[in-house]
Length: 583
Image (cartoon, rainbow, N blue to C red; front, top):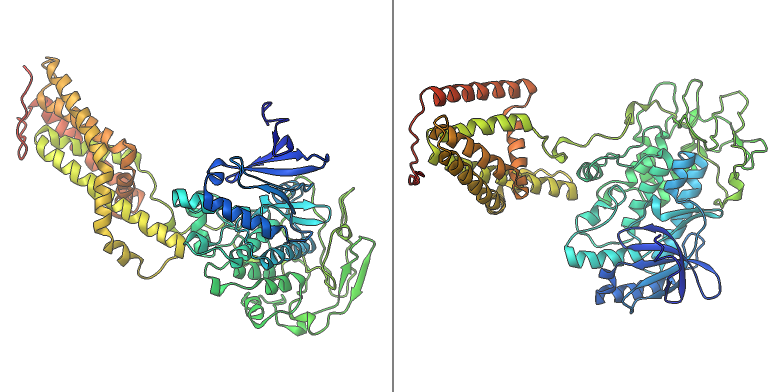
């Protein structure tokens, strides 16, 4: 926090320090008139300046006042009419879920179940009064001594409504934002449950649920359901992956997800999802009652194991650990969370290890009548990805081919040594066509990221060619103008120099190369560059083809250079009029 901001008063609250900042505003720790420490979010001016956003914010705050749940940061005060709008909530002590995982590593099975139930209860209490969070992510979950607490409820949607009105863009965190919202659907409870499942994947693995990388790549994995669940138990991985399906109708409900995490029987849909895991000889699979054994459960306080026999209903999902099954991969460095060890049939249980000074699970809230599901997979990981999923090829923009494009550009500019008029027309048409291809590719990629791949994507892209052609023409006009001015200036300087070595063909070649380079690198010509890269990938799919093309073009360039230097041709400007040469 800056010195100027520290100690400043806003609406009767004295700001103490900055806690964080985001797309909605800046969060400060503050002190009210009675000396209580609170969290105050100063919203960005564009929210306070929008009358519709202020009305929506007032409604959300009024609804949030009715929520009384330990998992929700209570709203204490708000000012929506003043130019400096703000919302005051209780100050939750503790790290965010993101910080907690970074410090202590992924959650074990019991901790994950506790987290899932705590967040689910918070969501249900909020949805009951008609509020949707829509930006549930690890940074919006505080890990307090009493359990997880969700912050920024309701306000996220208000801020986004204001931004959507002004920019037409949908905001959110890639990998935690429901793909239906990206596609333009109205926010509802379903989008929060999707984000809830994504947060649980992060907590269980310590990795973003859909990997890292460019936003387009992450959204592509979201659209195609490529969830990074490597290292998770088969049942947990299957349930969370099903809950993160791109289409709402294909998603596993939160009650079934909780049942899978708790090791309880669920609906027929949960049974189907769990049964989808491939069978491996020697390993138990969901739905095999004869495989269940008696296993020891560690005492929640770490005092020792307690043994119970699993009944038939419990055996529907509880797995068994044969000897040799590796544990869930954990970080080798830094502190670790307590991990429940496997129990071998007929053997003694292994007591859980707890870090010195760690607060045991009993200190946190836990749902009644539950036991911790296993922390180890009952299946080898042939079915699970070894790392972050790879984005499908269609979702990644074409790679740059700077060297090849430069060589081809030099070869195209060689046309100007003999036919400068033809060169100008060819360059202009090529830029427009490649820009059209670039816009068409963008359109198809964006549609697939929003809705997922569909059979008619190519047909819809072709149907939009007239619109893409218009956009391509408009996008290359600035580059063409700048290129023509640069080329004309270079040509005029070269001819005016009076150097006999600078023959008209050589000067035209240099001027054409300069003009083409400026037009190509103009920022508005980016779609043309993308279209050219896509064309290169199609025409030369392998490195060998690209190398061959580069060699052929270089041979042409060398041959043209030899002709220009040894026997300069007389340039023909047709079909354009010949310009006046300087004297």
